[in-house]
Image (cartoon, rainbow, N blue to C red; front, side, top):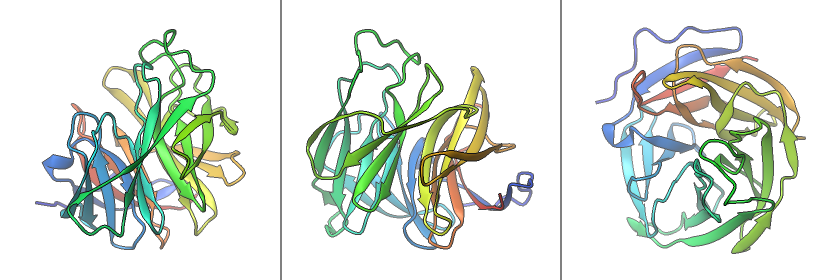
Amino acid sequence: MSLSCITLAANTDNYIVLEEHDLPDVLKETSGLYCPQVGSAFTVNDSGNKPIIYNIDHTGQIITEKTVETKNKDWEALTGDSQNFYVGDIGNNGGKRKFVQIHAVSKLDSSVESSVTTTELYYVNNSVKKNKYLKHDFDAETLINIDDSLFLFSKSWNTGILFIYQINKIVPKQFVKHIGMIEGLPGIVTGGDFDNKNNRFILVGYDLKRLGSLYPFIAIVNKDLTLNNFFELADYGQVEAICVTPSGEVWFTQESSFFSNHKLVKLKVTE
């Protein structure tokens, strides 16, 4: 059952909380969010869960499910264009993956089980043998579609520098080097989308100060990949994904953790 919270989190000068809804338990490890239409969205769960793209309504309840014929090694992002969903199997906390993957799933296939076309991504200068758990920069949870390209934003545990990669949608094997970098963010980036209405990127992430203590934030990045602003998401926890609807509303999902519940939150960013 979906529940709109009566007492919403505190509003700030940067945003107004419009709605909060509990997500079904099957989505307690929500990790990607994509909202190409007003009033609904698509989401996925991360590693260890079934390879399913869930269509949810405006209250977070599941409308339909599409099973993808591949393994969910560590699904961390979801985006799309007019023809395909793009699932980012790009999680790499341990740093030991030689390559990560992006799965293209046709939107035109109306069956409940869909075939997939997979792209392998190899990071240039990635020394897998030297990487240590949560102490490297070759992890990611953010994949954004713009025109003919996908943009991958790093989850940089080591340097804290956000690295941005441009991905070709159709080349099956790619060696990628960052095309941009952003310094000064207050933590790691876990999700993002492009706000077409305002011509900017909106990113979400958190600062992990110690086990269980998460300090989430939203960052505004200009289209030229320069940092505009960032601000705290007060009263939230493990925020994992974010999308911007065609009307300009910002939706994000929060994963279930010891200190917070799995939920869908809608904001108006006033910054």
